[in-house]
Image (tube, rainbow, N blue to C red):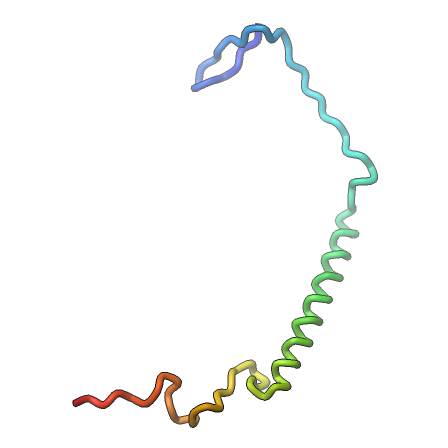
Length: 90
């Protein structure tokens, strides 16, 4: 008879005489070396950075963003707050 632990005490398990555990080795074709995975990740990151750089240049070419990435607002003078003129106290 085999017992299992349940609620911090051993309980008999009827009908089970033994338990065997087998660990199978994965197929050789499914393993990927860490060098291969690192190369693939590096390629993806380089492509992503290139796309971000292309998008950044495209946005800067519109003239709405300066070279530092700050948005240029053309709908009001530089001295005026983006929230409108100051409220006057009465």
